[in-house]
Structures are given as structure tokens and as C-alpha cells.
Image (cartoon, rainbow, N blue to C red; front, side, top):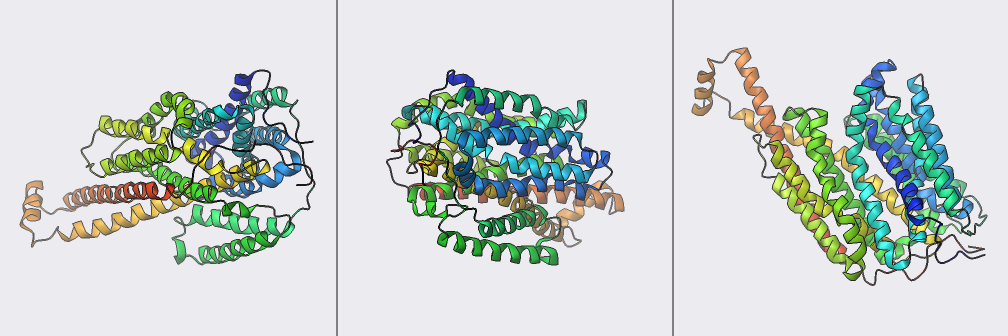
Length: 511
């Protein structure tokens, strides 16, 4: 039996609410635990370094599961895969909160990350199923709003829960949301017909994917802690990862029933759209890393105030989403994507003019301005990515694009911290050279402090460090700003029309 072209649930907006809540919960959970790590490590009696495996285990298994989404969809069907993922994600969330040791928590977080993998692509696919073709831009705009708001809310919510209750509650709050989402989506969509296919399992492909992607994610998460390629451990994992991934690509392209459909990259809009999505999200993610980190370590902000300074970024996407969703199909989506890159790039170049005297209001206003770019980012690019895909390709393409987006965020997370600290060392060395007896200005400044005592020199070094980090932050925002501008050129290599000719659905029999 073929899938129906579209499916209208008994209550459209109840189904949309449940799908959105499930996705919000999953995206939120990828960031909510970050601020609670010191508390979790302390309560479970382990070091801070061991505690970071709470994040790494989730990220590794999430990255492995995402490319497998297409195969899971063909095997189980979209609805069963979504419901099963939500139920297991909810169960593992409860087990995370119930964990009595770090080993238990890491195991449950790994399972939670794996079951979280298919949730976003399946939510995207099911939303495209229940919205009529002319309103599918509204579905993607709604999903983009969830994707933007959840990472902002995550750290603030996690900090508040940890401070006022206890860390297990950052996992327990998923339980009622997950139960509600699973029950509602099942009751609203169980009458929809789906076709599944029993294709052979590509065990070799799975093994190479797990090895390659898993080790790559560990390298990205642990690289800064282990000083990158100064560590034998990092070198070995990198070599094995590269060999596994290259072998995986060669194997999958020659496999009759590949576990991941890499042939989708032959489609121009999917390839260029995914590249734009990955690089754009990586730059967006880098802003969300470097800004709070700079505010907390160098500007004296608490975690809550740093979160509040960043939060205005989510205001305009919330307000603009209905408008964008309604009228986007009347505009060339490349124009909307270009507007997004232009605005986010301009916001970075504005931040590159900051100094250590910048106030909370200025930071918040720039974040508010960047929200315009964020509002136009996800929906147009996602539509371009999926524009020429049909049937089962929708779920496969969504899973692959989401995988590369998440991987881009992982690269941004590692490289941001590394570049920021390296540039600080460079600027610190240059500024320190000016503090000498041969520099009249430096001598005069030291004399005004009361002489070159140990206390005064420590104070000067602290000032130099703050300025060096400020200069490093400026450098990084210049890189991000011009990076966004370059993506304007990239997105114009896609080709309209961007409307989908086929209906999203499960594969036909014998696929």
C-alpha cells in the first residue's frame, strides 16, 4: 500500500503541539545538563573531567543514530519510529535522574542520546505530512523556532533547577512531557497508512559508521582537554576515525542496501543546502559558546546574567515565525537565506567593535538584532535541503542534514575554545612586551600604582589578560562575521523551484 499524499489528524494543532513539545524536550536536553555538570560530578563523587562524559556520551550516540534514521524509517515506519524514540527517550531520562553512580549515568545518557537521534528528523517529516503543501513552510518555521529557543532556555532552566531543587530534576521533567507527546501523537496519527520494507541489514556499514562517527565525536569533545595532537590518544582515535569514515563512504556507495543513503548528495540542492546549513549552524553555535564564556570568565557575569544577555536572540524569531511561515512561499528562499546570513554576519561585525566597557544593554540589543537573522535561517535552508526529495528520501535527507548540522555544532564547540585560547596567548604575549622599563608609558603607569611590587604586577597581568581575551573575542567575531558573508555566495548555487513535487511518506513496497 502506498502512503497517502498527506494526512489530516483529528486535531491538527494538538498533533502539532505534541510533535513540537517532543522536539523541544530533545533539543533542550542537549544543553540543559551542561551547567549542572559540576554539581553532578560533586554529588556522584567524581572529578570534573570524568563528569564531562555525561555530555560526550550523549553526543556520541546521538551522532551515530542520526544517519541511521533513514534505515530505521524504512524498517519500522515514521510513526512507530517517532513514538518508540519518544518512549525510550523518556524512559532513559527517568533512569538518568535515578542513576546512583557516574557509570550508570553515562550509560543511560548514551542510550538517551541514541534514542534522541531520530526524534528531530521524524518530527520534521511528520509535520510535513500533516501540513498541506502550501503550508509546509509554516511547519518548518515552527520547527525552526523550537530549534532556536530550546538551546537558549536549556542552560538557564538547568541552572535554575539545579540551584533550587536537585540535578535529577533536569531529567525528570522530561517524563510528563514525553508521555503526553507519545500518547497524543499516537492517538492523532495512528490511522495513517504507512508502508515498511524488510531490507537486509548492512552490518559492515553500521560497524564502520559507529567506529568513525563515535571516535570523531570523542575527539571533538575531548580534544581541548587532551591538548589535541600533542596527545597520542587523540592521534590514534583520529587516524582510526578517518580510516573508518573513508571506508564507510566507499562501502556505502557500492552497497545495494546501504544503511545510509549517501547518493542523496548527488542532488544539487540537498548537497549545497546541507553545506550551508552545517556551516551556518556551526557559526551560529560558535556565537552561543564564545559570548557567554567571555561574559562569565572576563566580564564578571554570573551564568544566569550571561544567559539573560544572550536570551533576546530568541524574541524576534518567536514573533516573526508565523509571518515567515505564511508568506515564505511567495519569495525566492535564497533571498531569505541571504538576509539571514547578512544579518547574523553584521551582528558579529558589530560585536567585533566591543571593548571591556560594553554594557549589558548593548550586548542584549545586538542579540535582539541577530534574532532577525536567526528567524530567517532554519526554515528557508531546510526547505531548500528537502526541496527535491520525495517519499522515503525525506526522512533520509532530514536525518543526514540534521547529522551534519549537529556535527557542525561539535566542530564549532571544539574549535571555538581552541582558537579563543590560542589567540589570547598570542595577544597576551604581545601586550606583555610593552610592559618594560623601556616603555615610558608603562613606567609611568606602574609608578602611579605605587611601584613594581608583586601585588601591582599581578594586577597589571590581570588587566593584560582581560584585554587579551577581549582582543581574541574580537578576532573570532571578525572570522564569524565574514564567514556568514561568504555563505551568501554559497546558497545562490542552489536552483529553484524549491517546492516539493512529491509527498513525504514512507517507502513504497519493494523500495
